[in-house]
Amino acid sequence: MSTTGDRKTGGWMVRRCGYLAGAVLAAAVGNADELPVLDAMRTELDRSMEVLGAEDVPPYFLSYEITENRGVSVGASFGSLTRSDPHHQRFLDVDLRVGNHGLDNTRQLRGGSRMRSRSYNPTPVPVGSDPDAIRAVLWWTTDQRYKTAREQLTAVQTDVRVSVETEDKSDDFSREQAFRSVETPRFVDVDVGAWERKVERYSAPFADHGKIYQATASFSANVETRWFVNSEGTEIRTSENVYRLFVYAATVLPLYKDYAALSPEGLPDDETVARDVAGLIDTLLALRVAPLVEPYTGPAILTGQASGVFFHEILGHRLEGHRQKQESDGQTFKKQLNERLLPENFSVYFDPALTAYGGTDLAGTYRYDNQGIKGQRVTVIDKGVLKNFLMARTPIDGFPKSNGHGRKQAGYRTV
Image 1 (cartoon, rainbow, N blue to C red):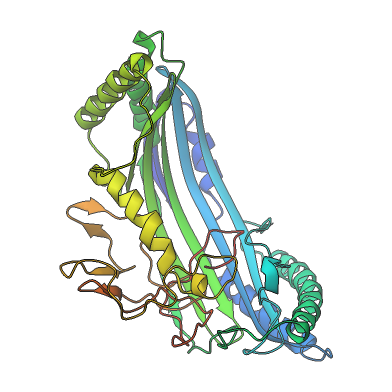
Image 2 (tube, rainbow, N blue to C red):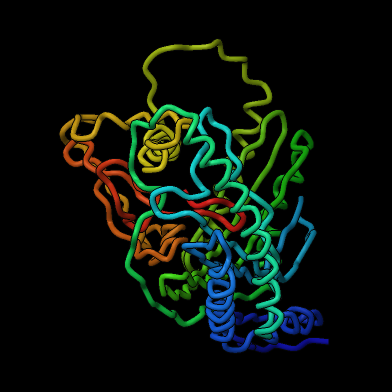
């Protein structure tokens, strides 16, 4: 049996040739207009603020964020297809605060102890548009968060009374304007059958080398849609595509090549991948017989890819504003504002609106961050001098506002 066709269903466009097409397309059906999701979130948030507002310890802030991922992934090992699956899931994150902007339940306890861990198990949300089903999950999760928040606030207030006054006297939460932006949902446009054959082809050369014990090639096409509402009036819906190709192999040590793009056309062609696979094989086989290198201390020259990771870890995270406030972090640059960190010919900026640079797609682009704040271009180092920090809604001395760089994955706290 052989059929060929295209089908688009609110978030997906999948092209398949062959018998299994129906299975993939059936999974895509049912994603009608997602505005009912935003409406259900707003209705339940308003109800929760009204009901909980009558409590003796009312919330002063509440936000809901639902993150949806839908798409398809395929994988192969040593030339044979191992999986070809659609995926569709939604998760809820709730930020509920009691107290006030100056002191609330999220404050870190002195000595590094935290009642709020940096991650938790996100709450699954129904993937349909039934407002009652969505509101039921919102209600239950809000109730649990409220009970926890009250306990946290009591612990924070006790900690403040018995601890030495902190050096940073900024508020726990910033005051911000409301934003509204409802983007059109994007869809996945991919020929699944063609990518099944590609990953088989990409992983096949490893089978010619018996000393390579693991080898896989995988491809995923995903659209992430986020709905966000808060008690300040913000309503956001954003939608982003990411297409990813990953080739992995291992013998004594593992190696991999990872490619990401905002469209299938942004991924490398077959010739480029074949060349990279050959390079992985040569490097893996060379590593098997390479002598151990003695520990070395001294100057080093890093490759372009390695230098990017090094720069990100050494500098990037340390420029996040919240790290200048938390005692559990190093606070590396807390007292170095307006001081020289780099040579004069170096300037560093972060621009979340950039979608490509030098002909390469940039993963992680966004218009609004995970706290509903519009992302801004921020020059953190100007001609070698530290001038700014990447700010979420956790103020620090001298930086009372967010600049739209509060980011997280579903199930994690915003940083």
